[in-house]
Image 1 (cartoon, rainbow, N blue to C red):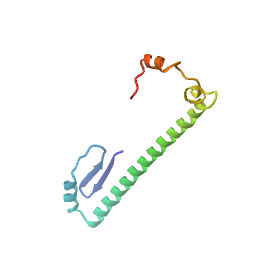
Image 2: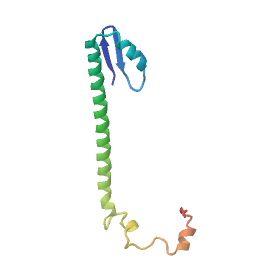
Image 3: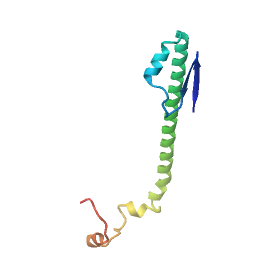
Image 4: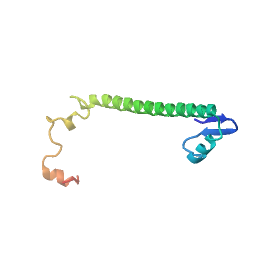
Length: 111
């Protein structure tokens, strides 16, 4: 997204993430503009900020929706008869017959 703003003879562009002018340069340029031109710049900058905030919120909501859908899709795997049920069920039998077999399997623990 690239916005070009023409105010008098000054062209400002919004092109993230490249920064083309410094804050000091912008403030110095604003001194040469009329009050109406300054308001136009403020309004445009405010609109750009609102759009960025809205886009970020939409991305966050979409990410949350996808995570929820993935979690809901996985529930059936943990239910009785599901592919992962026996791994997590307290009623399932241990995978290893003994702690010694478990230790000899090469599985490292944090302990």
